[in-house]
Picture 1 (tube, helix red, strand yellow):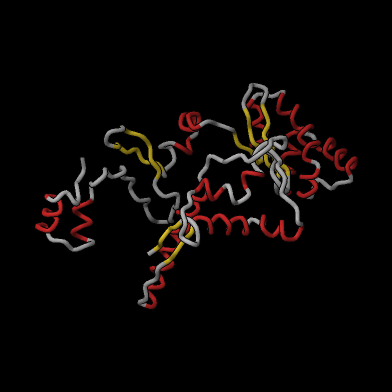
Picture 2: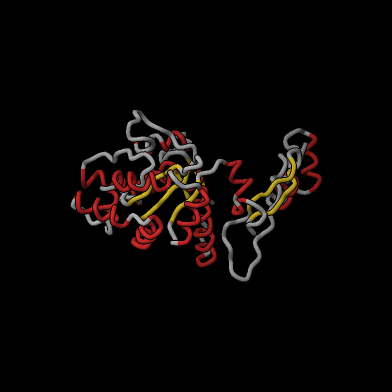
Length: 286
């Protein structure tokens, strides 16, 4: 059994109260901003759920091989602190004794930033690897401009760390190139050279325009949710070779499986379940 708790000492915590203590709100947002900025993605809830699933699988495998059961405790705050450690934030402070700064929408450690196209759309552009950097140079034709930036700043822009140091000058060269072209033209040029980029889009734009979030993606199935209507819902993103993805079921109504659980899990008889209903201890759907 996996028991998800807030803090290691058993005290209360949720995603927002964990995130505020894990440092990330102080490196989120524009460089000029003051105070913490929360991310709307409940990252620690998401990662804790995935970690809990791994814990259940590990415990079940241990039981199958040894016959021993295990209680697994998983504090939400430990997930956040572990991830801060795994990403190097804790080690960075211990070694350098410095705070990580805010860098806005720049990618930390290499080159990446958002840009506006000439027709008012926005894209995220990344040149993390050498191949991505070469593709960006070919797509934009700015190779000599970038070389001059490197000479002027004494940096080797083939090195990702140096690209981060020269990020503002690189962005200054790319900005007019993207800004004088429409979205479709930028997309065509970048795709032809394998540039790593993506469009900014709202949830509505994603649903209406992106095939990855539609029935065109085999991960999605259309379901009929009682009381709501029909919409595409995702199955597991895991795609096992030779196996069909599982069906996607609507969310159960409150109390829908009460009798099934009481009978199959707790082993209660029909008469015992009926008495619980009569006494108002349990209830079915509706």
